[in-house]
Image (cartoon, rainbow, N blue to C red; front, side, top):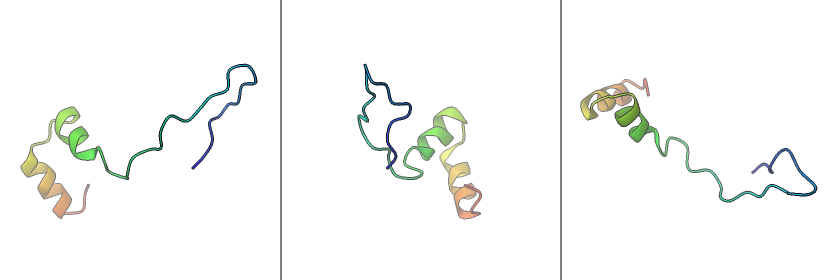
Length: 50
């Protein structure tokens, strides 16, 4: 895991939590942000598009 950049001497940055797993939030993004249906997501997943 990388450290916080830049580093400030007066008010140092701190990591609050590590990132999640790869593709952890993709289904939510595909459905809610991109408007794909569950069927479309499944079809694209089977074809290895996403």
